[in-house]
Length: 424
Image: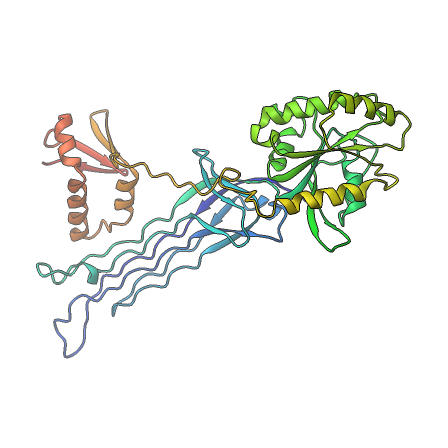
C-alpha cells in the first residue's frame, strides 16, 4: 500500500532520576554524598532509508514513545541512557511540526538522520550539588521530561524523470513497457491512484528512475482530484516527460490538454514550471494522431517531441536514449541544491521571557515551559530542593515582575497547579 502522508505524536523518553545517597561504611562515618545522576531519556530519531518507497509502516503507529533513562544509584553510579527509537522513512520525506507547520527536516540523502524529539536529561544526584558551603546536600533532581511533538511526515518521491499528463493518456503503459514496474492498467480514468516507480535499464547498462504520476485535471493546483498529491511528487523529478494522447481518442484536444496542465503546474510552483521538459506524443498508431501532431507542432514549434505508441512499443527507445543523455549532462550539476530542498530548520526564539504572568480571580498565575520543566524536575518533598527551586525562580526575575505588577505580600501564586503564598 502506498502512503505518502502520516501524522504522529512523538513522546521522547524522560530522563532518569538523580539519587540522594550518602556513603555509609564501617570505617568511614562521614563519607559524604554519593548519589549518582540519572541517564538520558531516549531520543526519537528519523533516518532516511534508500530501499523504502512508502510511509505505510507509520500509518498504524499514531503514538511513538521512547523509554525513560535509568535512575542514578548510590556509590556515584550513573544510570544508563535509554536506547533511541529509530524510525526509517523513504528518501524525500519532509517532516513538519504539526502545531506550527515549520519544517523540522527534509531527508533526501541515504542514511541521513535527525533527532525530531529530544530525550530528557538525567536528573543530578546529590553528589553533584556538594559545595564547600554545603558539603552534604540532602536533595537530588528528577529526570527532565522528554520532548513531546506532534508532527506530519510528507513524502515527495525522488525520481529522475516524471511522466505527467491527463488521465488515460498512456503513462502507465509507457512505464510498464520500459521498466521493471507493473502498474495497474485499464481503460478508465484514474487507474493510477498512487505514484509508481520503475527502473529503466538501457543497452549500455546505465539506469535511471522513471515515475508514473497520477493524472492531472483542471483545478489540480487547488486540490481538485489527485492534483496536490501529483504535484508534490513531480516537484522532486529532475525532468518532466509530458505524455499527450495525440489521437484525441476520447474527444479531448491535445493542445488544450497540454495548456491546462502547464497552467496547473505554473499555478502550483514556478520552480516546477521551469524544469526541463519533453513531449511524448502517444497513441501515434491511431490515424487521427498525425494530423493532430501537425497542429500541435505549429502551435509549439520549439518543443522537443517524440512520437510513440505504447501499445505497439514503437518510438520508446529513442525517448529513453534522449532522456538518458539529458540526465548525463546534468551529472555535474547539483540538481538537488539548497533551493530544491527545504533543509533542516530549527527555530529558537531568543530574548523572550521564559514565563508569562496573569491574574485570574485574585490569583497570580505563572506559566512557561522553563517553569514547568523546573517543577517537573524538583522533588517537592525535599526542603533543600524547594529552596533551590525558589532561588531559580527569583533568578529568572519572577519576584521583580510580580512587584512591578503590584503583587502584595500574602497574595496567592499558582505555578504548575501548585498554590503558594507570595512573600517578597
